[in-house]
Image 1: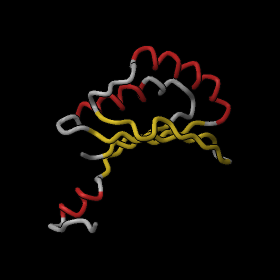
Image 2: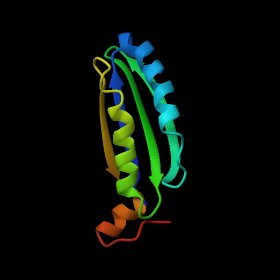
Image 3: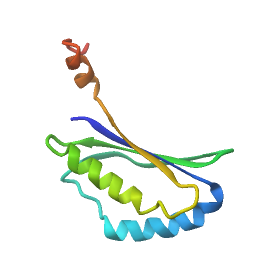
Image 4: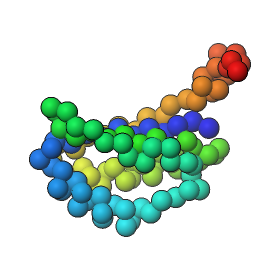
Length: 107
């Protein structure tokens, strides 16, 4: 069961527009627990370059493609906001990483 990790960044001056868009997106894409467990729904931080956020979903077996498609569909709705950038990545669990090299994780 891999993780799908989404990273988002936008300039601070786009925050009001981001919040308005988030309300719209939440209505169109309510939570879908059938895809996996949201371990981090949205962690947010700010730095000198703007605002950044990430989310992490532990994907259920057989749901990876659907989870990635959903994440991209959600994030694509924000592309009209100036300076908005995102990436969606697939990360292995420790167990998957060890298995990929023919090993068993400790513990």
